[in-house]
Image 1: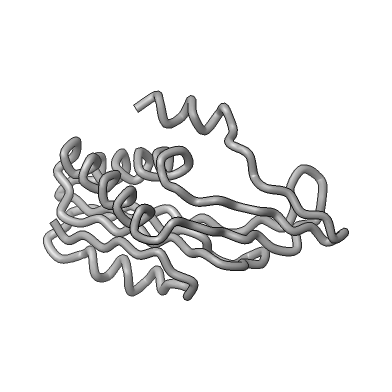
Image 2: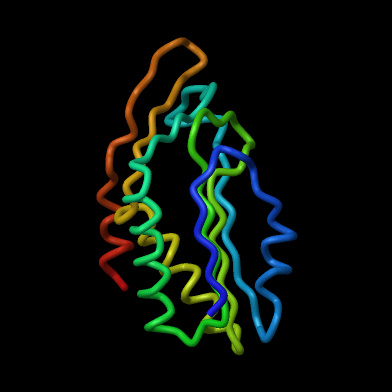
Length: 148
């Protein structure tokens, strides 16, 4: 399986990443997460993402391996950005490739649900009014991850 895991400050080129998965694939599915401009009715100035180097990459590899064990994937890419990101910027790319679309679609949905709860990232929101808050775990994310 063609596997690419990256945790980085730099943006990613989704077109190039998807092209890299195309060899031998019958279907490629992807999800791109972007920074929202409004959270709970407040204007977001930035989202700051922190991680634990080494541990985070291993956790992402573990998730990719779990997806590959469950679905017949020909490729998997997980890129998660860190640092200070502003509204409209990319945060995450999850893409999977398979001989058949169903496996790619399901594996991508599985991975994005698992990332929300199993990957060691910490997020802090910086609002336009100058306030800041750490993003708390959400019960609905745990429910979505557990459903798999």
